Structures are given as structure tokens and as C-alpha cells.
Image 1 (tube, rainbow, N blue to C red):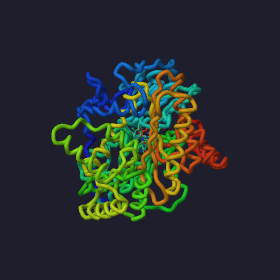
Image 2: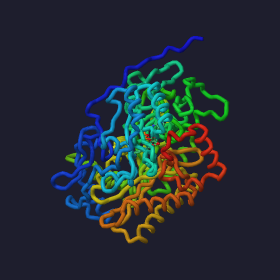
Image 3: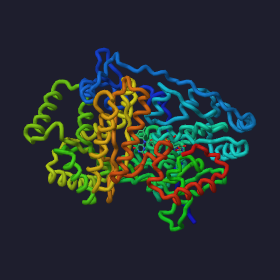
Image 4: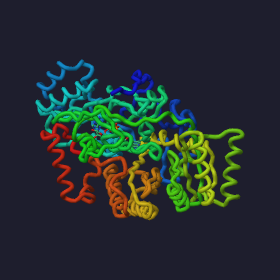
Length: 585
Ligand SMILES: Cc1cc2nc3c(=O)[nH]c(=O)nc-3n(C[C@H](O)[C@H](O)[C@H](O)COP(=O)(O)OP(=O)(O)OC[C@H]3O[C@@H](n4cnc5c(N)ncnc54)[C@H](O)[C@@H]3O)c2cc1C
């Protein structure tokens, strides 16, 4: 049988400037900051807003949150919080050291602390203002499947607990170490296994190591003319293994699919043997395929070491767009009609009014002609077209494909928009909105520094229940905030991000000013749980793509029958009888 000719690409290019913050989100050279005259700016030069001053942001945020947000109103971080005594396992460590280079084994407290958390509000609060009860005792960085296999075998022999680590970007406390784990906990950092092993142009597949992050995968594939198309907002740091383990979804899923649509075959190392299959049939009717168990396994079954994925040639054309509608209901009817017409752009995201305002407030200072242009646009939208500034919503669009495909999509989508009296907001605003999500990831840490706690959480909901669910969740959070007499006004905003035939994914953004609130982080967590209760009560799902981790575990009985929960446990015991992967997710 002849095998299609494969490309074996060079490794990803590492840029020394790409080092990451340990105590806040993102690249070390990037983040929101205050200028000497108290305006907001963004450091570095990676993003469109880098180096720009955004004079409207603080006044808008002060009014919206009814809080001071002043230069001298800061909550100084005590990072790094002290970590508990290390639990050693001398026999394991001796054998480990015999098989790996010294620099593959790390016990530095800050590195261990970083490997013991993701990016939930509670975790980020704990490392700066609180305490962590347990962190990994060691971090190991394997460089091959054989090394992963050896680490798992050693862990099993010496009763060590392993927790796989990808990019550490999860938002479900999936990496938080179980408080009562008495064994030595070892974080297995997969990031050195970051190569695209091969690309098969004929069959449009690629085999990629699990520790490769989205940025590395995009760079290597693009160098060879391809794309994976999976682009979660965290893709600069999150990894292929993490995407599989959390059952992730990207911004361009309408064109490329979710991770389960993109991945054809998974290779994993478990304590009861390997799951090794690089075969990637287009479809296979075998039932009970163990590879599928890995989706959403959150590190509790084994370590994904690589996967065969679908790739596509880089799109000939990539075009942004945006449309403004009078209110959420109208914007919602527009996205529903786009879905029903069956011509959905790679990305289509509908922001509610508050989020639209948020995006406007983050616009850089304009000069010269741009000031007049902006005033004219505003005049046209509000005076000529009569849209209310406190009701209008915006939809950002990203079209990808061949020139003909994109032209057809644009025609169809803008025709539907016109039926809903949508006003074209232009490509520049669409691109800004799309790119802003990467920069916005940094804002939570900036706000936390100014006593504001914030988080986003997602759900999937049927079309028929979406608008009501959004209203119910907003109302519930306002009520819970008022009931506790919390300071200021809560910020609760929603965004429709992914479309399906039967429903949509909705993100909520929730923030409040917490200065003087006792146990503020726990209070926030209580409110987030109330929101989740309301989501479930209003027809939403437990998760759309963030997963369950430890954060949402308490809600599992609300969605699974006792028998279904027992099957899950039975599977875990069968695959990992000694609980080597004892992350307790
Ligand atoms: C700003 C921001 C934006 C985000 N946007 C999105 C988004 O658009 N879409 C989305 O789906 N998610 C999003 N997330 C959530 C997060 O990025 C995803 O859950 C991501 O898939 C986690 O990948 P990771 O490599 O960082 O995994 P980690 O956080 O390191 O780990 C997550 C879980 O997976 C396990 N794991 C990691 N690697 C492996 C492996 N090789 N084998 C077995 N288990 C493993 C870990 O043990 C842990 O249980 C976002 C998060 C943030 C902070």
C-alpha cells in the first residue's frame, strides 16, 4: 500500500520575547496599565491596542460599576503566596533523575505554584491575596512518548500522583491539587512536546504533539500553507492536549468544527497501557472507541501525547465585518436567520449593549480626521437611524474561504442583516472586536488590582430559551448582588459566540467592585454558583466548552442520572485502578 507523501516540518520558532507572566494572564510584555495622568494604556507591541491610550475606559468603568477605580485605590498583590511543605518521594525521584536530564525536573516553588492552578477568579485571587492548600511537589517536562511512559510507570510503582499540564489556561480549577492528597504530586508539563510531526497534504491531516500550543501549531502549519482552524481565545497559550482534555471549542468552529470534529485519532499513555492509534479514518463505526473517552477527561484517565487532526489549506481570503442592531432581540433574530440560511461565517458573535459599550470604551484616543469620522458615524447611527446608545448591540463577523465563498457569504449575511435593519459597522470595527478578545483576557487582572472581581462563564442553550435565559441570569445576579448589600453596581453582560442548528453558546461576563467585602473571592464564587443554578433552571447546559473540573462538579447530579455517574466512576477505575491520575476532576 503506498503511503501519501508527508511533510516533516521544522520545529516551531521560539521567540525569547514570548515569556509568560506567572501571576497574571499572558505575555510578560503585555498588560493594561495606568499612564502617569491616570488613563488606561496597554503595554508591549503585540496587539492592535498595544501602546495606545484609552481615555474613555476608566470614566466608563467608574460609572458602570459605581466605584472609584482610582490610581491610589489599589489592592496590592502579595504574590507569591506561601506554599505548603513539599511532599517528597525519594525512591521515585532517584529513579526519575536517572532517566531524565536535571533540567527536566523542577522543584522551584514559583514554578510549582504556577503548575497548581488555572485562571479562575478564585485561583488568581488565592495566589495574590489568599492561600493555596496544596501545589505540585515536582514538575517534570518529558520530551518524548517514551519518557511519558517511563514517568507513568515510575509513578505507579512508587505511588505518586500525576497531573498533566498543558498551558495552565483552564478556568475550572482542573489543575488545583486535591487538598487531602498525601502522595507526592507531580505535574507533567507537556510543553516540550510541541512538534508538528507530519503533515499529509493529500489526505489533509497532520500529527501534532500534545504540548504544542495554538500559536506554535498555527505558525508551523501556516509555514507549510495549512491551518487547523481551532482558535480558542486562549490559543496563544493553551495546548492540543488541553483542548482534547477539556473538550474545547474555538472561535471559528462554524467553519472548522469543535475539537472533537477536528481530532481524528488520539494517542495517550495511561497507567493500564497505551492508547496508540495514528490511523485516522474519515469515519469509523466501531462503538465504544476509547479515544473518544479522552475528550473532556480533564487529566483523570491518562496523558494525551499526540493527535492526528484535520488541516485545511490557508484560506484564500479572510474578511472582517460588523453590523449594529437596535436591540438584543433584533440582533438575536439576525444570528438565528443566518444559521437557518445555512451560510454561517467562520465566526459570528453578538454582543449585548453593555459589552458593546465596553468595546467602545476601549477604543484608543483618536486624532485629527479620525475624531470627525467617529463623530459623524455616531451621528449617523443615533440621529439618522435613531438607534439608542443604551440599547443597541453589535455583531462581529469573520468570513474565511475562497474568494467566491466569501463573496457569497457576505452577500447572504448582509442581506439578512438589512432585513433586520442592521447598520454595517465596517471591517475595521469587526477586526477590532475580534482582536480585542485576546487583549481583553488581560483586563481581569488589571481590574483585580483595583478591587474589582470578574470572570466569564459559558453555556449552551436552545434557540427558544436563549433570550429569556440571558435575562434570567442577569436578573438573578443583580438580585444576589443587592441581597448581600455589595458595593457599587454589578456588571453583567452576555455574548452569543457559537451557533448550532439547535441552539447557541452564550458567554456571561460578571464583575463587581469588592473593596471592603469580607471573603470577597468566596462571595464572588457564591454568586457564580447562583448564576449556574439559574442557567440550568433556564434551560442552559452545565458547560459548552470550559468543562467541569472541580468548579462545576457539584452540579453533575443535576445533569447525569445516578447510573450515569456510576459508569463514569467505573470507567475511571478500569482505566486507572491505582488512581495515578488523581487530580479529582
Ligand atoms: C482568557 C481565556 C480564554 C479562553 N477561551 C477559551 C475558548 O475560546 N474556548 C475554549 O474551549 N476554552 C477557552 N478557555 C479555557 C481554556 O483555555 C481551555 O480549557 C483549554 O483547552 C485548556 O488547555 P490548556 O492546554 O491550557 O490545559 P490546562 O489548563 O493545562 O489543563 C486543563 C486540563 O486538561 C488536562 N490536560 C492538559 N494537557 C493534557 C494532556 N496532554 N493529556 C491529558 N490531560 C491534559 C489537565 O490535567 C487539566 O485537567 C479560555 C481560558 C482563558 C483563561
